[in-house]
Length: 135
Image 1 (cartoon, rainbow, N blue to C red):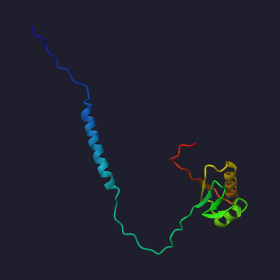
Image 2 (cartoon, helix red, strand yellow; image 1 turned 180 degrees about the vertical axis):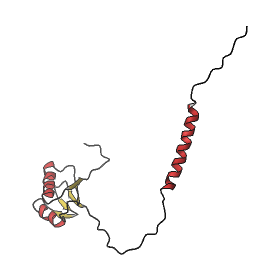
Image 3 (cartoon, one colour; image 1 turned 90 degrees about the horizontal axis):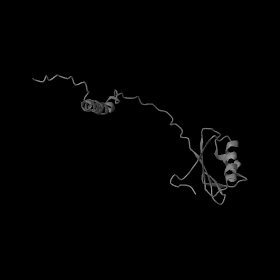
Image 4 (tube, helix red, strand yellow; image 1 turned 45 degrees about the horizontal axis):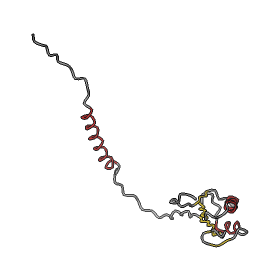
């Protein structure tokens, strides 16, 4: 007797070919996307205008000897608030960068920060060394 060979339908998807097609489409989109964003060339009109005023940050430095510098101008704790008022324009958007030695006591730093805030300074930042791992 002969055995009957039955024809079976292969119901599996060949994922390798599907992945190849998707990868090829992805490569085409990645290559053409930057070309699409160039847009239409337009020659813009020329006009006379005043340049935008660049906002300058104020640097406040506290050394380990508790010497205070405002934009490299020396000050001391008694006159700091008055000296800072002379430099600070009153614009709350002016950035103030506090740069202090790690040996400066916390209380001294907080006195300086409080004086800055009393004068209207809102945007305070502290300069740190990103490479150090702490004490």
